[in-house]
Length: 150
Length: 436
Image (cartoon, rainbow over all chains, first blue to last red):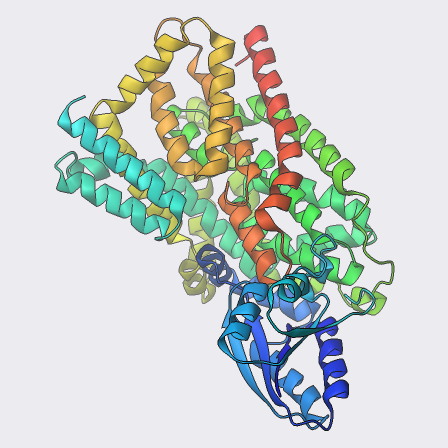
């Protein structure tokens, strides 16, 4: 069975991966870990380049964030511990739109994702990605729920 | 309308729309507009450079940018934000009220884009540790940064253009726009706080360990540069305050652009090995954008298009001073919320200069205050209304905190409307008291 695991590096998406791994343990799974990067804004990038010294200093002070590759590798490791072998994919754009594009492109049987991700910090849009995917995806979705974790 | 006027107007409109669409880099669009004017023979390169590019504005911006780069390289912005957060005992409600005032104060003297780049980042990081919703705080910070920017000559690029092109000093802006900006800031924060205080705190389970490690001094990368940068910045502000008096009393040409340029050049000379890095990080792209726009709007001025528009407005509003001033303020505000406010301010500088002196039209100074307040504050309305908004908005989106146009406008429009109404009342009072 072909399964799409979505991750954004948040504690909620880690919980979703762990739950998915537990439920699918021992099954023959052709897994794909998908991470969607936000759209790059030219003007923001320009100013970030100009002020990279202080921004790096802030990052150091608040703890460096995981890079894209680290997020995906960590997700693959969680799944590998349950014996699930996965490939990785990275897309850029709106998370819900990109997950739906990926679902339409490949023949997945199941999608696993958290009820809210990094954007869960914002209560108003709580679960906007999972809501859009479960409403519009033509296949089964496993939306893992948990108390507010961020 | 003769052919050259029509060509100049068409090139201006294409440039304006091109900048608004953001499909091509705005500096490239402005540069292409300038070159097109030369290709059509409206302006020669020499005429563009010697007559229409306002080098005082470019010089002042270069000086200010240099000082800001030095402060940024030293770690000033993170130090400032963390020091304020610590003094507020990391209370999210106090942060919500005080941080916007800090951005207003800093933006009155510095480029609000840089202020918001750091404050959006730091507010997000603090929100993560203190478990509060960063969105209403960041939107309030942007609103106040734009309102604060209205209070001085160097607070916002439109003010630099209006002030230097039309001969108004740093002190003129502080005296005439300052009180309005302060009252508008207080009201805008009150509205924002009232609107969003309920859903602000998401959890009371704080990461105390991480907070205890966050010493503001840890944000400073280079104490020598930090001290030098602050001294140079203080000197620039001091020069801006006294330059008119020095010029008139001692006949020393300490002009407004020289006020930041003198300490900026001193820093570059004394910077040693750091000078190269500082020079590399100055925002030359914005300076080129301004140069291109000066030429494009210069084409309108040369061909008489601006004079025709000025005559039309003056005739329409003849002897209706308050109606004209209110229209200038609200039209500037709406235009700035939709497209970049720099080309708008530049065109309006010529329009109100050409209107001033005609019979039945108010004095140039009060028209400057109306356009300046409208242009600076109106930019709050949408995520693209000002560069500071774009940077704060996209920076939050990049961190995974989705704001969306709808939520931005719902949070930003009430405080903006209140600030604009206060500005309009301020202009009416000034007109009644003949204090302009």
